[in-house]
Image (tube, rainbow, N blue to C red; front, top):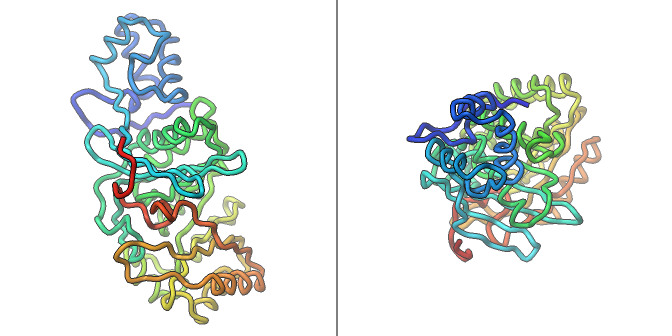
Length: 356
């Protein structure tokens, strides 16, 4: 499988992970090396998650030294690590340019799920989300997205079975790098995770949903809805205000018709904001008759936020009413809330963490 897009930031030395297979072959040919070295190097990078050329023990020492002079292999450094009472682990990783992001590993019953970030910070400005409070620093490269997953894998020493791009950032505002990362995660020469176990979560960037529907892989789509009342959604999610709910409804219908796949709608239940009878009726109308699953999320606490979660009883009311109109719905079991690792809580926080 080829990954031809060079989406890495420019620097004095190119990051070897940004090179296409063809570019790596050209360098090796220039150095008088056999072609099979490229596969060896790529295995060290993508399967073994090597942090430096010295680890590549089946390469000649002279080649390792030359590569270290020609290209970089800038591994992320773990700045902080927190462990939740439920076994989840949150990591603060810093890339060579000083930019940091958070990711989360969530183990359970022989499985390991990873919540990864697609951007450092976020420009969408959702009112209830800690990530967007500081704005967007920059988009991540495909290698930086991928590396988060491998970092969690290595720390748990377990195979990752699923990945959700629900961490910091809006994946569809970093579309090309997101898709390249998903393809590498899916590839047998990468993490080897099944496409249906790789989920992209978007606030509802309609042009990119349309584009995503035309991709050949069966990646899973989740849409942060949070209200089916236009005025409420506009207030909660100003970054997608220009995309109306009517337009979102239409594009999601197109998505289902084209792919045959069931999207998930994320709905963070906020007391006194989107938990009224009117809001519930609108949500039922939006989802009724469509292929969809609704994840009801009891809003996680964010320091300094004016929003409070609705009650557990109200969350069950939403599930029952949605089920009554034929829409499958569940209350999501939020993981890692005690270490600010749950939905909407990621914000590059060092408080209470073990420093790396």
